[in-house]
Image (cartoon, rainbow, N blue to C red):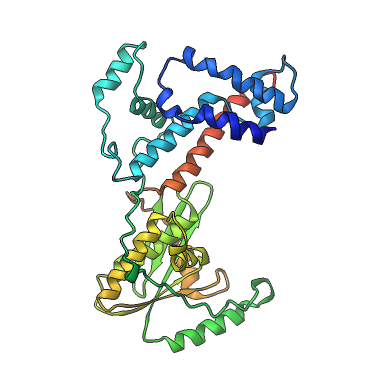
Length: 336
């Protein structure tokens, strides 16, 4: 029943809420009974059941919270699209002063979003612009990566086996400069590291970033540093198979992670400058020295960066923030 309601009714209530979300609360509250009746029918709750308990039983937040979350998602989508007419829009201070001075003033979309961003301390965060896929059909990058470990099952293979295979590999490619990358994510810490033979770069990202973003950002930084080198033969080691698979099969998907596209563009650019760059997957935590060093450096990263966050990561992060807010509201209820 809930699936039917979400697909047929709730989707219509949410559609266009970024536009109709500006009226006064008394006007918007006229939609709430529709939401409440549907949840009662879906859950079989009594008419006397508290509305807030109904939300929790059905795991469906109030319409007001959903409107705020969807408005924030739309705002981030504007920020990620450089072709959107409001991409460079800056909220003028007089609108905020007018809102504070006249409570009856109906706020515009950007004023409402400003208040939401302020509540969640997100005013100074930026979304990564989505780069254009400008590869011509004859210039689509073909990315391959080395993986001599693919026939081994990690749980059934001793670390020494992986180490021996890796040593043999390094002997075969000893004329390539080895670079190790790794990303790390904990409850409130996201970072990555890039280890060159003589130096290590450790960067801390915003906690909204995913571990996939951290791993991809590490590969991207490695390529950026390579572009300034005089040597031409490099091999990048990463323990993120998902990043390598995304680079290999990017043409099979219509939506791409912006950092993946940036990596592909940079790989093409470096190839045109006669760089020979190989990608190599290594299993994590099996005693491969370079990978262990990158893992440790990533976890110890403290230097923040001004980098932005991809749209997909922001959506997941803001959804978590709103559901945390909902949980706090529920915790303050006395009869729950």
